[in-house]
Length: 76
View 1: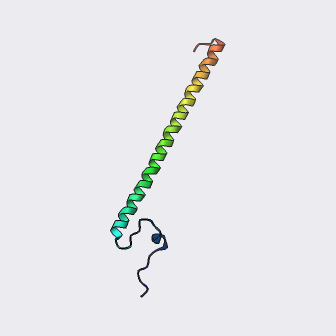
View 2 (view 1 turned 90 degrees about the vertical axis):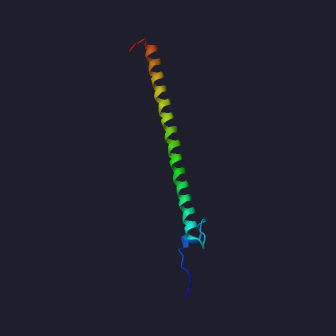
């Protein structure tokens, strides 16, 4: 008998505990959840930064347009 067969990917996981599968699965699910939450947070921060940049560009274009109209002495 060779013994217990394990996948190579399972041997090198940092949360692998040979004698307690339930515990290692709990740690693995916790780690997966943390990675997923970090991805959501990064996407949220990126979205907010993009929205802020787009709003600043919009305001700058409106200021530039109104300044151009003031220089031409045109009222809307």
